[in-house]
Length: 166
Image 1 (cartoon, rainbow, N blue to C red):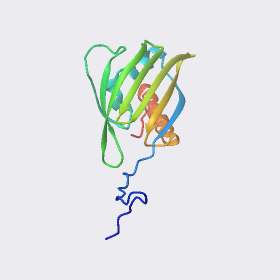
Image 2: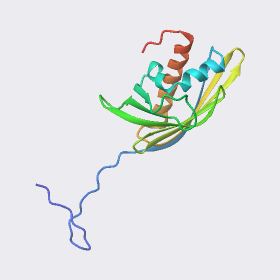
Image 3: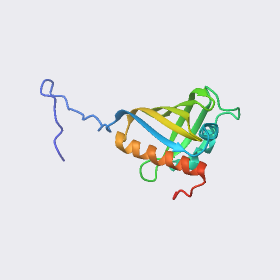
Image 4: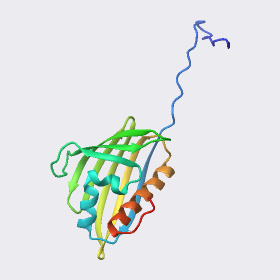
């Protein structure tokens, strides 16, 4: 048995603090062009219960209310975590302007993601930009951005009818 360390000033045993998992804070901006009009892209993204159709990491999504999505709407998502684990995420719509913007705050324990989704005409298509302010993330910014790109491509392909290799 290893001897326990003692505080040199008091002689009291020193109890080590639990290891803390690193957490990151960062901002990510990503844009995708979707070959559909902004109203179509916005409507699909705003249907929070349909997120599992296109987002690989979301297992299920349930709305707190059957009312139309609006500021204050809440949703709970069950997402894939590390290994075989899952995570419960609480989402709240914080801004909503049909066909133009959608803001959602996502929370899971100490991890918070504030997303701003912007939809703009790009000829007959949509320029869809997501800005994510992330705090308390257990994954670094590069890994988060890679996952964001993958999910945006899945959304794009779902709307355009392209097979997605899920």
